[in-house]
Image (cartoon, rainbow, N blue to C red; front, side):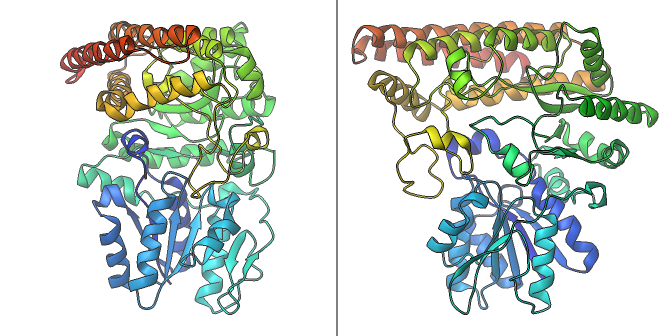
Length: 530
């Protein structure tokens, strides 16, 4: 069967500016499983291929692909639907169109009901499910027995929900991901960040996240590839990682946990890396309670990981207020998060950006103030981070405690109101600034890119730890973010005393933006060519 697997365009400008640089690993894995069976599979990424949605639809129609698969989230769903609706109108014959991904897995019936151009939704992890579906379609078999899909019966028009597919416990049996898009990005000079998935599942039931459900394929356990299998793939990817001049991103939901099995796995992984004399610049998601920095054994573990290349960690922080963290089901206090963050920084192992959820329906001005000061204490108080808002992603527990109204479109993930009118005023004011001034998005992106470039360059030069260059860069960042904190605290202070923001704050806004632009210009002139 002739198949096209497509990573569509990120829908929102803000998301596109910050987060569209990653290779779609799900599609790379699915393609790798299909090709040995004789299926002809082409991988497309609208950004890397330089294709508009119209051009993508036209190419599919011309090439007569029989099946189209989109991997989507809420930020790319709209783009996939636009392409699909074009194909339904103009492609003859119309290809069989499938959606997959963490959000459509939990909005399957609603999407199929609303969009006749979509034929099926692949729920949960997709390698085996997608393969079984393709085999059934190519042989003319019915889809009734393909576990893990929701599909439209073309004879009756009814949506049918097949049973869930059991989680794959034999991950070493999967083919290594096909990195067509990453290789293409090097040729087209439209870079993407590439990565690897070592373990699936997450032991932490955070209410704002569906990683435990989705990566666990509706199970709560952790399934891991063997360290030898993982390192073998990493060795094969080493030339590609060097070409992209970035990290090899470890996409595990939580790479390090306190579990005994996890620690044994990591030690074996590090030993296998050393046996192969392999080091790569690695980036991974961890939690502040993944390690106990008071224990020598945990400190040694971090040093061992650093020695094989873990130089960047994405530490989920979520909030700087205890009540908010309790609401989010994060079993840690901000002061401990700060200690772990600074300890990782001293080892040269902190990342360039972190997660924070400052705004939620019941948040108060005091709680926002706590989070702003906390973010400043760890050097992450960009206005973009401060303005982050809890999203009602499909499949998360937080939706059960959120007073949501009906989504006006499937990709609406902000369908709730703030309880406190002053919080609503603050959020609207900050969002207007973000929408109005490009420098806000550029600040977050440029700081991340400069820090990453410093760390990766120093990695290849053999420089480890928290370098003088990185320390000087952090001092510049602290100055920039000091202005941001002063500005936001001024907004909070005025709203604490009255219901609206005065014209004086509008003048403060213009002065703040002017200083931010000047400081960012100086920073780029100093570090932009480093």
